[in-house]
Image (cartoon, rainbow, N blue to C red; front, side):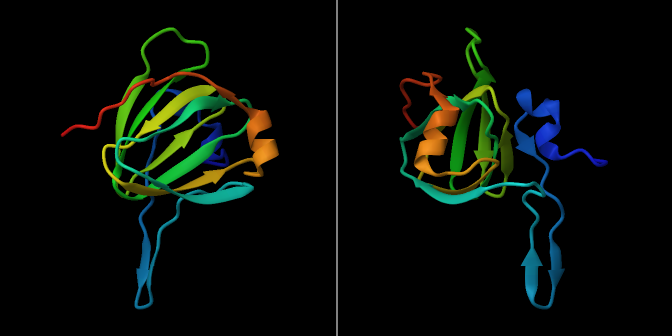
Length: 144
């Protein structure tokens, strides 16, 4: 992708899926590249079936999320849009990106574990100062 960081790619406003690079494998095991960016936070998140996370947007922060197990019903739209949010099903082994100024919500049809890599610090004060809470998804019922 030349010298441009993936976080600068405007296509993520419409398509959050980040192509996962081929893993490097040798006799010791594997290395799977998730993001090659300057970032300040990495968090491991577990979510229970039926729960909703996010329902906000970030003014400057972005994040890559890689799903280790489970799946996410990911909803997103540009800030201020009155249109229904786009929906993408994120599966185990997929990586996705949320740029700044994109309203988003994550709903969990099953217990899920994922890592979130962010541009900004996850220090609670800094994190709260950068986000604006919105109602992208108000009610979620996982499929039976």
